[in-house]
Length: 123
Image 1: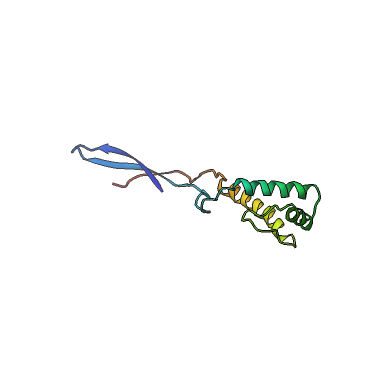
Image 2: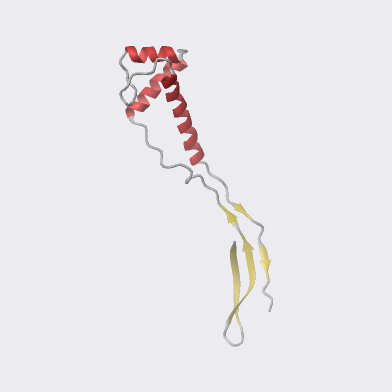
């Protein structure tokens, strides 16, 4: 709660306070929700873009996996792609989750102000 007041000086030179303005402000942020997100490496971004374009062209996850393994395109950690297509699916899923987390973290909220009340000091 924030208190703003008006002061006055009495006949003895002493400062007294009267007429308090009371209100509160609520501010919301998501900046503390997630630890800092690591940047995608250029290789991770390149792999994601390739998989995304292949999926958008109508290929299944298993077909994409076969293509990547046949062309010696490894995961960002240097491993072969799993035969079931789950690892290819995970690349797209994790990218979408990351984008959603960034959007949530960066969402802006308007401050919420309470009703302002003037309270008088009782002498």
